[in-house]
Image (cartoon, rainbow, N blue to C red; front, side, top):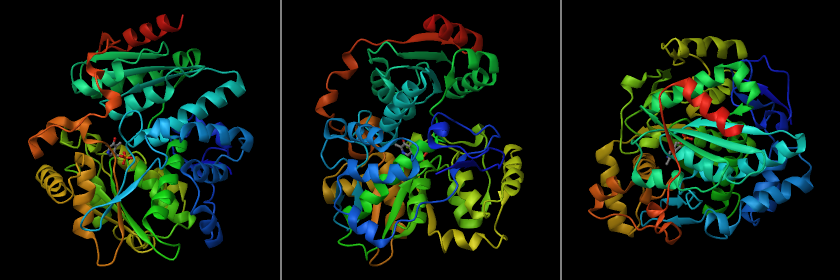
Length: 470
Ligand SMILES: *Cc1c(COP(=O)(O)O)cnc(C)c1O
């Protein structure tokens, strides 16, 4: 399998070569040259596999330059009950109304990002050791991504993490989760400013080519290809769990922000998984919903981005969306360059009159809906009343849209993206009580915390990194 860039200017590369990459050197996103095709007999053979065995079968198709005897133990070490809470890894349950919930949030940070990030930690460590290299991961977080990255990279040989977060702006639980890690290779930096300041510093440091090369700075953001491909696995697993046989089809409802999660579902469908529809759920930040309804993609600035009670979806420029549009326009890189110039200039683009747009809903099965604060609370209350199940606010957005769009006889699997304990305030508002804490996290907030506070200045952050690595 070779990988190319959506902007067309990267010579084809192997999986190991693109593993540590963020954006491709030409500013595009990495894509496989083609999608492996899974036929019916393959599906039949995969139906009874454990999560780890299924993950291995799928990953070996994409990471075919990693010897199988090396890849297998990395996958087995990642997807085990001690890390994800049960042998099933992603257990499926059904609500009274027939909607299925695929549990993806039983990893160490209680959000679905662990599903991919835990594998990434093991793959990074392996590839760096092979090459005799080290990597210093610099990131900015307002919550979920930073903690998932830290829990994936903690204690890994050859890797350090420098994670910037806005000082005093995360929940007590989120702070405790990140700042209580005792591992020497994890560095928490609280910035006196907002999340945008943190992100600007990461961009500035990454743009300092000399500093970046000298200190081997890398990232683990949501456009990393290995994260997307690791997420493909649970669409297959969810399909097998929700169906009696491989003649059945299912639809997936996916709470979406950066389009990483549902992009993996799209790839699973393109590989031949019998997926009927991909139901994209957004919150008040509905840039994706607007595209699927109208063909217009109109990313918004940070001033137009609403702060909501499903904060991990407060995104107005979906970083993985370029992957799908690349396929939609027939992998025409020149066209992608033009479209994304318009995105970067703040204009966006309109594909409503493009003949390809009918394929979005038709061939690719995309539909979308939105959910707002009131919908979220109503859905949390209604599922609690009918099923005694507590949905987190993001999963509730997915269930709300799924219920609205579900057709008679359609099997809809809603992807759970976080556990309610991470969003106690909204749960309290919805149900008048706070969600239970998993036993493993009891006392987390009382643990000693490790964090340095710095002003929002790139040079200060660079000096801190330099000092830490000396
Ligand atoms: C990251 C995240 C999302 C959005 O996922 P994308 O891949 O960015 O679309 C939704 N819910 C939760 C809880 C998340 O952490």
